[in-house]
Amino acid sequence: MAASDRYPLALLVAFIAVFAALAIAPWYRQDWLLENLLVVVAVPMLALNFRRLRFSNFAYTCLFAFFVLHEIGAHYTYSEVPWREWLAAVSSGAGGALAGRNHYDRFVHFSYGLLMMPAVWELMQARMSPQRLWRWLMPVFFIMSHSVIYEMIEWVAAVMFGGDLGVAYLGTQGDEWDAQKDMALASSGAVIGLLVVALRSRSRAAISTRS
Image 1: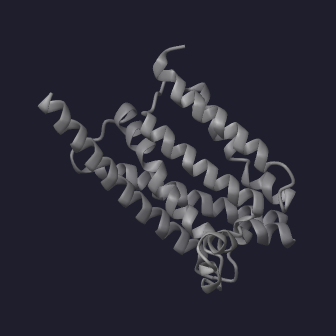
Image 2: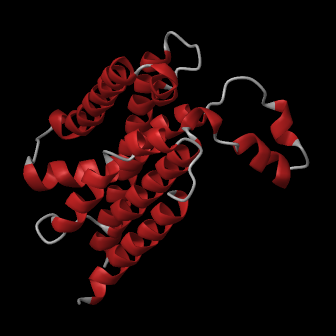
């Protein structure tokens, strides 16, 4: 094994450990299974295509962070992640002031755009090589389109399963504009992620020029 492969492998092993730990007694087993359908497809695909499409360590770190955030949401179900209790435990009760809707799902939708962007950017450069303005627009459009597809999957699953499972998976918490807000947050995360990627690329290019 090459030394450069050790870090991605370590992240994969760490994620498997997190996945296994959070698979133990999730709050709603059926919802956990639904939430992880895409994970059990995406993670093996990333591993199997490692040689053909090698992302940077930065991109793999961002992917790892997103998948961990998702697994936390899947374990508790997104609308019931006790982040307020965790915040209160480390900040002298500050979490109690944040009553109302549980925004963990909104946070993860934003994180999807933000944390997926480095890998999406590298994918576009490796497989499509968009030029000029399209170089910047295509990664954002890619994430926006996947956000739309995910909301459609949620809708279909909610209709198919119905009942408490459908409500838990949909996770609107009574907000009729939930899907639109989720897509908007993913899109804004993608734009910010693109700015981070651009600044990072510029910084690396400047260092390379000086050396």
